[in-house]
Length: 274
Length: 105
Image (cartoon, rainbow over all chains, first blue to last red; front, side, top):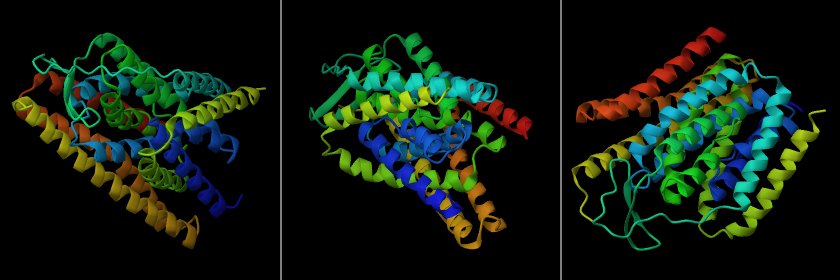
């Protein structure tokens, strides 16, 4: 492919992944990385590095937009960030030592897991409607539009949240995905955080998580600046469109279709190992 | 719900960080778009295109870093030592990233 064709292809791939990511609230890395390796033909680490830069862009754009609604739990975020950033740095360092095929196999495994999570997503609201209860130092309070009133929640089982954050950060920087898809289900199912607050807080954290690894990829020359730029611009445009669409998207069949796509992606990743 | 003082402070910080993140990502998008345009029109070897692209990427990566620095400063101002500690820990980890990156060159 010629230079300009590659740029346009990468930008289009970024726009599609960003759009899907915004609609599904999972970030687009799970789609962008396989596209860059399988279609554009980039080595795995270059695909992961480029994808990590788009994770940073998504984080800043999403957190910049949702800030002020009270959904982002800053205190919880700033605490869990210590774990995600540590995991991110560890992942960034080990990514440079692992052979490509191990990374590909890991990616196949994690996308299978993500598909399973999407298919069996736990629905739990976690909000406390009694306003006299103290949400605690790490808990939160926000205005729930669906209920038309303020709601609060307490954070439980903090050690589990810390461990999940470390692992999510680690996987994120090894594979170039956001990591929210791994962290948000844990926060909602086990730690008492409502899904909207968990997603908003995770969106804030993934930027710093990716930042703990992206410069390492960059310094190894694995982020080609023009392709990184194309992917970032594509993702920003795509996620903007995705958010507009997500308000009226029939999320159920879309989730199903994308979970199947992810399973196919992981199958291809495993098949290419030989 | 009447937010107490801590809530008000947290909300103010959240808005400030939101504006900062939004400005950072917008500035990097402009730099990256300009660099990409020059890269296509002038060719891959144009120094100005490469410079804009790299500055754009560094600006993109610098935005969440600046967010942590501003949070750290705010928690110091509020004398909220627990979160001074967590934000400082994140900054130490990111310094480790920088060291690893410099050593890779």
